[in-house]
Image 1 (cartoon, rainbow, N blue to C red):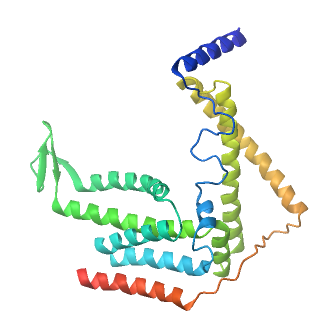
Image 2 (image 1 turned 180 degrees about the vertical axis):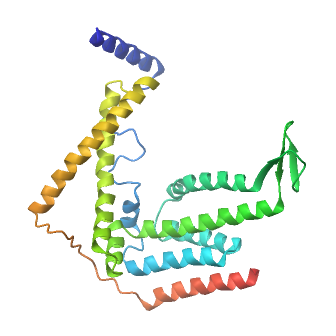
Image 3 (image 1 turned 60 degrees about the vertical axis):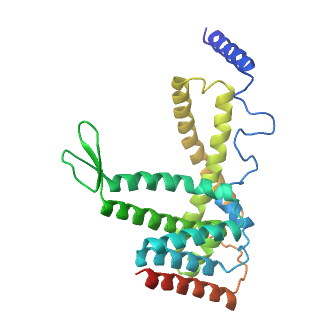
Length: 294
């Protein structure tokens, strides 16, 4: 009976798709997502294609941290806006990230900060308060100049910090960052765990995509109830599969001579004088802007 119901629902679904001229199943050679090539769209992909990939990794970490600290310490919206714009230009022009993809990276932080800024700038009161107000028939929705100023400062400071971190992520891969942390004498166990967890995330993501495609091909997402059940089953199977894969990959590492420590090949990239000059001019420019608008 269950098998007959399954086939009848499948026939109805296929008839509906043929009438509407579309299909919920990915075509051959497609995964249904925007990028099919493995790794395309990930931070490591852009870091490997970056125009700054031959630059010293420690220099890039120092540059990103310097921009981040100046954005936070100087605490001026003009400085934050300058960091946001300058890092955006570097990410698009130097890191060779397409403008459309970079805007896509910024959508989530912008949406989150926009909602937070609105909550800071706006207030609700039974009395007519604030510099600007709207009567909602039961309460006043009001704005104050001080609240607007604080919201703008928070928005640009956070976006400047995010842009600085995007500069680091889009120019330095996880392996290169692990090398920098190792040279900074960060405990080995922390560096190795960070690198293994980061790599394992992509393995589980690939497995989850394969499991979802298998569930979709069996009408596992045909309605809300079925989607919830398929999602729960996928999550449970993914947890068990992650434990099995962890054991498999550990056995593979031991068979290749793993003795509790990873060794990475690192290319020598000396910092050139003109590169240090660029960072110094950037810092001086931000300090000059700070004293100019102070």
